[in-house]
Image (cartoon, rainbow, N blue to C red):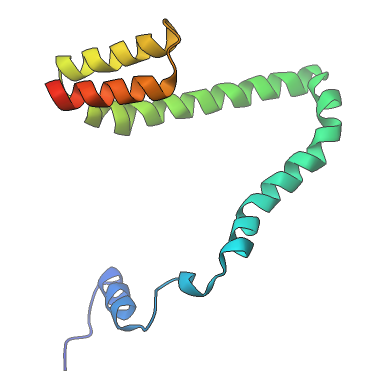
Length: 128
């Protein structure tokens, strides 16, 4: 008999390996109800708030709160762009130049994003 004194993570992993079927029961869930369960609450929230949105936006306090929430979301997105994307993807001067060129192609020259993605992927594959 093996030693049953394992750390909690190792014990959970061992239990998951001996349990029949998948761990979360995802194979038994039908696809259409799960899609509705994911998107329906947000849709109902939007439809429920929509009639009051214009009146809410005209209040000075609510407008300031919405501007603050917008600034918060922009900050979180910039932090997410910097930490995993920039620090692991931009490793030198060449990759930085490619990233800046792709940004300029999108914003200064207004090129379609799919062209910029294909061009950056091709240039990265050829020169990096």
